[in-house]
Image (cartoon, rainbow, N blue to C red; front, top):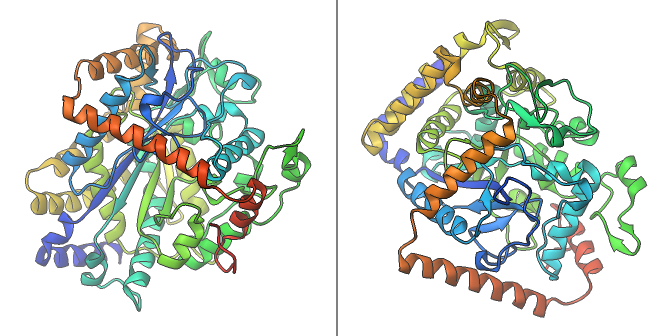
Length: 527
């Protein structure tokens, strides 16, 4: 039974507590740049922030205005947040009067045509990233490129899988099958994360303009759902018909890779109608269901670090899963970094729980529709009193299931505290349990309460928080040595971009063709 597996593995950890000090984590925080009034910033990526193509810590996501701040990999939450804070301070202090938008849902947007697509220079790799984003604009619209989120990367040490007896003939096989099992459990229980941390129950009118939706009007500028937790993760988010048809397999890595490989090689009629060129310019990389693997928008991804020019699926196929990336987290609008340390402590305990539990396969298809339905229900109505979810074919009240999950997560948190010292993981679980008992403590409820009690729009709410966070970050200047280090990093990245542009050979068309062929099983690799 699942509980038996959890307790057996926890007992094994009692004899090997050092395994829990080897957990690695990292954060990727997206944040929309706006001007001082909350209008989308139309300025290019600042030179003082370096090259968005080659900087290891500061880049852009889909839009030129959508910054992405990336930490390195850290063995402690303290080190993780030290770096995350330093990068935030450097960025804000180099944005002039511009702000990092506090909410996941976008600021006031111009017309679709005016939203700038991210630019990475003229190297082949830079143009690949840019054309890919042009394709996203064609497929989903540019407004979708202005939604921001936070990704949490997590890995356990190699010895963890060996010592605790996970199945597999080789270390790589054990690691990959164990991470896939973790992903299956995450899919079953990730609705809990949306209840606890969802922070986007409302959207601005400009985001919804011209789009069908079932939201209710809060004021002239704001629409909402009364019990929603995360509209960002609902059908209003990064979805379309082609995406909705994709059903990944989480029973084994080989089938997962095969399904995604099919999606990045199979044409889609609507995209064939668009074509790859318009007026002699590239507008999308291809006409397949997915242009590249990363276009598949999922709540969690198996990851392996890929070399420049290497396809993510090739990296996974050749070296197995290295870590997992949690992608369903909204920005916490009340935190200057978009996430607080307490959330990190809880996520470590939650993900450890998913790793230690028994994880039955999801049936022949490798995809659990019930789990997807539970997730969707909580995203749109998670705070509804008495909300029922489905577990093992039976209805269960969300709060009852939530408490049961937290009981198991608490056991993992206590083991993490025993290994690392202190009570921060158990305290983090206690804070989340309070949200189960008091729905008004959830971020989504706090946002709606602020809007309704103060009679302000979502835009006003986000602008106030963005200004407050900017003031906090500006008031903490970096020490001269650290500031110099970040400036040197920016200059090095700019030089690296220039060098890529100088040394590229062949045409961009040839580069795209090589990249298309650089998939698992192909005989030609991208260079």
